[in-house]
Every structure is written in C-alpha cells, then in structure tokens.
Image (cartoon, rainbow, N blue to C red):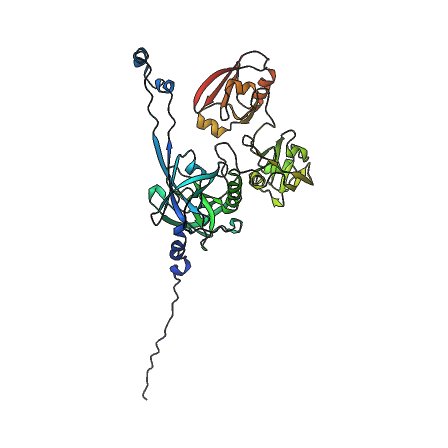
Length: 460
C-alpha cells in the first residue's frame, strides 16, 4: 500500500502590540503651536547695598581704618539678566507668562522661534496667581494659542510643554498629568491656585511656558518645580487655564485682579476631628475664627462650623475653599452648606473683596489684630527645626498706625520674646500681650530673615 504523506504547514500569526501605536505622535502638534511660543529675556537692577550693610561685612580689625579714612564705597548696582518663557494669546500681541519672570524687570525682550524680537510692556501682573500679561506692538497678525477647559483634564492624560530651560530655546518635553488641585502656598502663605501636577520635565527657564493637551490647546501655564537639586525630578506644577482665563480678563480691563474674600481662619479635618464634629468622614474646612464684620460674620458663619460645600462645589480638603472663593468676583452671592453641632445647614453669603494686605482664608490663628496691632500664626515644628528655633509665632499682618507698626515690625517676622517672657506658642503670646502695660517701653525680640533683632514697643 502506497502511503502518501501530506505535510501541512500551519501559519501562526503572532500579533505583537505596537508600542508606537500606543504612544502619541507630537510632531504635528509641535509644528502647529511652536510659532506662538516665545522666549522672554529680562534685565533688572540688583538692590544697591547701603554703606552700613557693606561696613557690617568688614572684619573688626580693619573697621577702624575704614572709619578713619571715611566709609567704604558700596558696590554699584549691577544689571541682572534672566529669562523665561511665554506664549501669544491673541493676534494683536498679548502674551502670557509668569509674574516671577517679569517681576521688577526694567527691560523685557520677547523672542520668537523665527528670530524676530520685540520689546514688551507689562499690562498687569498678579503675584497671587503668578501670572503676568504683556503686550508687544506689531503690524503683522501673530499666531496665537487657544485655551482648553482645564476642569475637563484627567489624571493620566498626555500633556506636552514647550519652553526655554537653561537657555535651550524652544525645548519640547512630554509626560502625563499626575494630579489635579495641588495646593502650594506662596511665601505669604496664600493659596489661591489649584495647581496641575505633571511629570513633564520642567526646569528653570520653562517658567511661563504653555502646557498643551493632545489637541494643541493650552491647559496650563508652567510655574513651579519641586526639586532638591534645581533640576527636574518629575514633579512639575502648572497654573490651570481656568484660573488663567479669569486673571487675563481682569488684567486686560484694569491691570490688576480682584478676588473673593470671606474673612475666616480654617484648618483641615483629620479622623479624630471628624469624629468629634459628628462627621461621617474627614471632609470640609473647619472654621477656627471669623473676622468681625467680615462677609463670613455677616453671613452667619461661626467658629466651629465645617464648610462642606461652597457655591455648589464640594469642599473635601480645607485648601479647596480658598481655591473656590478666590476666583469669585466680589459681591457674588453664593450658598454654602455647613455642619454645625452635627446638623447640616445651608447659608447664603455675599463674598467680599480681598484687599492687597488681607489674608482672606489663610490659616491664621487670630480673627483680628491684637493690642500690638498684629495678626499672628503658630510656627509649626517643621518650621522651628528649619529655622533652628525652640518656639515663636509668625507675624502675618501689621495694622497701620499700631504699636507694632511704629516699632517697625513687618509681616514674616518671628516673635520669640516680649519683655522678659519667652514666646513659645500662640497661647503664651496671647497671655503675655493681654498683660502688657500701656505707655511703657517693652522689649520685643524677633527674627527677620534669619537675623535676631531687638526693639522696644509701646502700647498707647
């Protein structure tokens, strides 16, 4: 019997996932948006040191010689050059960047990718949001960028940045959104921007540059990085476009920004506080103090209340409240939900206007200035360790014409002694202040920028 052997070849199709198919291609996007991204060079003058400051740097062994021959001539002020990034937001030459990029700059130069250069003027600048609006004069119609709604941005979404890090013009970096609504209080302990956190490589020089979504729309303005070395470690923070649009609109109209104000001191709620306040979980902003005759006071908010919703938006963390209040226009009427003694209530309130020297909803420990004319805040353990102090309280505000103002006390000073009493915390400070005599010079010792200072203060 003849057997025929048939060999069948089986074609096995192995489907290998394509990495390239999963990753976005940024080439067309970069080509489209790059003409509207700019580099910003600034020139400012350094602060000129006084002869007394300069003399203080001279060793004692030489000081008598200098005093006999006259005081030394202080060094002349120097021109300080720095750079950042920005982008065109309208065809007629409006440009958006960071406040800190152009702050105190005497000369602002805007450079485009096609090597054209313009001189820019500042239309308005806002320290609290770290945004500045510039204007250049040109007869040609400029390419400009559109904004997206940053509220629709999702964690994990791809984003791209263009800027000039370390002077390397128009560098492109990409990454994903790591988190939204990050709170980063500024040097004045104010917190009005719910930052977008990304892992996009941002470095010095990227400040003020745009953060794009995959449609080529601006979702944020690159502002800050967290770094121990000065370079990117994957923690970058951008101002949301929703905040920028509100700021730009006001800067165009008036050159400044008005914000909503409540007049409360707040803190976050942990598990133990939630239990004591009869909350089902840690949430909301706990009211520690209410400033007399403030919008909060007139609206019926009381110390001990917990705000869990404001203007229809939930308050999960205490930091959510200033983000929402600050973006509202003064005199806006809103409803808020609170929990008071375990019961939920709804209040109506008219938002006030945050003045330049007001602290708004910053977490201060006093509802108003005290006998010295100070609004103060507790120095926490981490700050004490950083400053190598064993106690003290931070000055947040100094009332004009007060005893503290006459003594030269400034916001940011750290008071550690009054009379013969050491000040370790808020409670000791209040007790000492309440017992101070009037019309009697009292020693006040404090730290300013790391230096110990002693003065006298008189309560009239």
